[in-house]
Length: 410
Image (cartoon, rainbow, N blue to C red; front, side):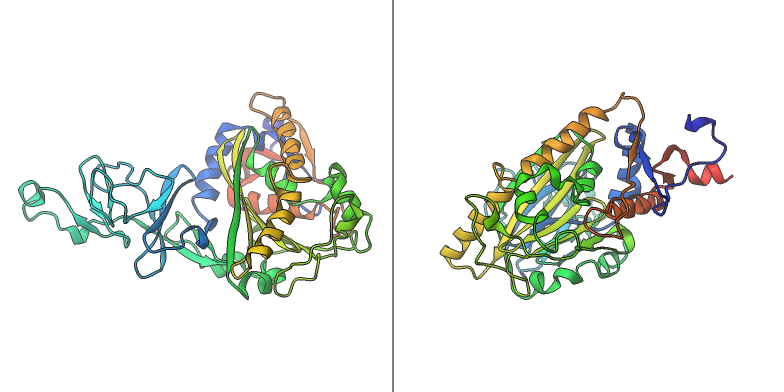
């Protein structure tokens, strides 16, 4: 039907009943366009600095289909590079994590060595050795002119490593703006430390996971949340605040953990965090910082296909925690957010059902974003704000995605 329209139906977050077309979750062409126009253009939050505690520690990952290696240098600074040898385009570092001081069979210790022709690079990305260089290249090539492609990389907002595939990306401070003001004290007063990691690969679209993190109307799905939060004073007064670039935050409240049988009040917190408080920051295009009193959970998504997403979950506490405090934070975290907790698996089941109903080949349908409750907790402002930004960056309306806005205007 959308092809018969002369003008596209714009996504207007102020409409009384805005909706998106389900093909934004299933169409292969739209997914490929998202990778190019969004994921390769902006800042993305990745690993935590405590996952690279020692000089020469590294982590590898894939962002927007591009292989990346993150390395802590001998100067203790964390850097990111494309994990691709400039010689013949081969993958260099093949392990998911490790330390460069352990030599590989194809190269020396302390270096990243391409197994194909044994070209070697140091932790600063500099080429340090090319076998039989003089014989093959004479004076036409210098090691100083061959290096790994460095990526914009900063450690910010609680010690997370942010990077971009776009060398001309705006400053990170401009991208995040004031979105982190609500939990700046909690994140940046003391060093944080990761104590939990797991991941899930779900047959669903990455935006559906971010949608779930961007609204609380689905708390009806969580008995734990209904008992400890929805029935408590202050829950429905929590306010969403939207920021430029698609980010959104939601205000704090006190969670009554003792209202759930078997749960207990949480004795630990973070600097500046109300005891048993709850705060959240949702970041475009697919990350969430979520604090529940004693534990910080950070979700990051990696889109694999229109109907496949990898979600990584990290739990963090204070680096100075005693063994007893750390054990308490782990118990508190896993009660709610562990793989067998009382919250996370229900969210994953929710988006799995959406993935089945909106997988490639299904009939297009309208997905409503129409709850307006004065920007309070069950208002769907978080999703509407996200898709307004999606429209701006994609040049397509989420409500009429098969028509490019620029072409339609002509």
